[in-house]
Image (cartoon, rainbow, N blue to C red; front, side, top):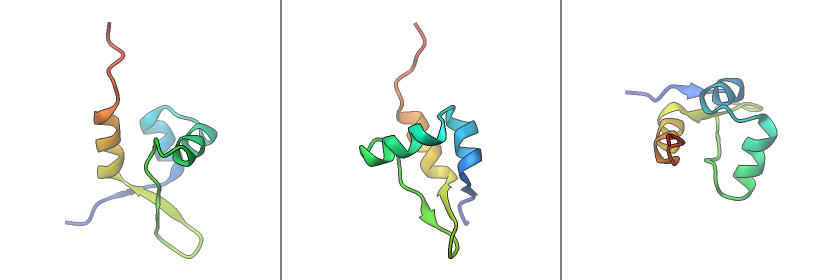
Length: 61
C-alpha cells in the first residue's frame, strides 16, 4: 500500500511548526527531509511525520 505524502502546509498543520522552524530543524538533523515527488515538488511521507511526532517528548505535566 502506498504511503500518502504531505506537502509543507499539511506538515505545518500536523506538527504545529512554522516553515522556517521545519527547515532549521532539517538543517540540524532534527526533522526528516522530504522526498521529491515531482520535478519541482517535495513532500513528506505521512508515516515518517507520524513516527517523528510519536518520538517527540510529551508536554503533559
